[in-house]
Each structure stands twice: as structure tokens, then as C-alpha cells.
Length: 137
Image (tube, rainbow, N blue to C red):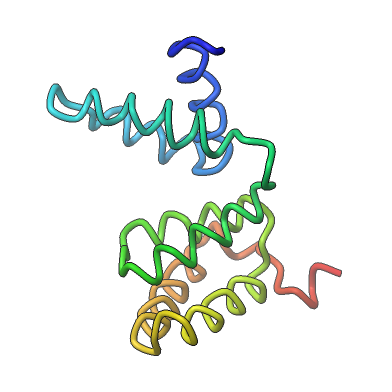
């Protein structure tokens, strides 16, 4: 069984790979006495335990996360995980399909908001090189 330190180290590696160094560095720099235990927890548990499991690849995990965030209206997290989904290899066309699928099960207003957030994220300079499905082939 891995130690807490090993889980944290594994989690930090996965967190950086999925969210990017800049995001993780900002989160760590913003850590306070109040949030230090929280940062440790999400690094060990969310990233070190769950995202590190072998049962799903990162693309599949991104699809599951996007669907859940859309369903629950977690818009700030959605923007972050749209960026992560691109980093995990999803194309804009695939993300479009995830949002459309979510409309059926989570509602049109949830999908409408998700499309608005996605348009903002995809307009960022970093997203300029992300291929649409037909461009990726």
C-alpha cells in the first residue's frame, strides 16, 4: 500500500499532466493555512488515487468529468476541465458531442451554458492549435 507521500507525489504528477504546470503552480501559490489540507487532500485522493487508477484512460476520465460538471453546474471547474480534456487528447468535435449528450440528460440550459464556456475556452490562444475531429485525422 503506498504511503501518503507516494500518493501525493503520484497525484502531483498526474495533476500537472492533466491541468498543466501553470494551473497547478497558481493553485499552490494561492494555498493558505485554511486551504493547505484541502490542497493535500485533492492531490492525494482525486489525483493520486482516482485519476491514477488504471481502469480508465485520461480521455475517458475527462469525458466523465465534463459530463458531471455540466450536470451539476460547476462552471469554474468546467472551464478548467475543458482545458484538461484538450490536454488529454479530446478534440473540439468530441467535446461538442459530450456537451450535446449532456443536453439530453442534464438539460438544455446546462448545455447552453457549457457551450458558452467552451467557446470562451476555445478562443484562448492556447486552444488555437487544437484540431477539430476532421483535422485530427
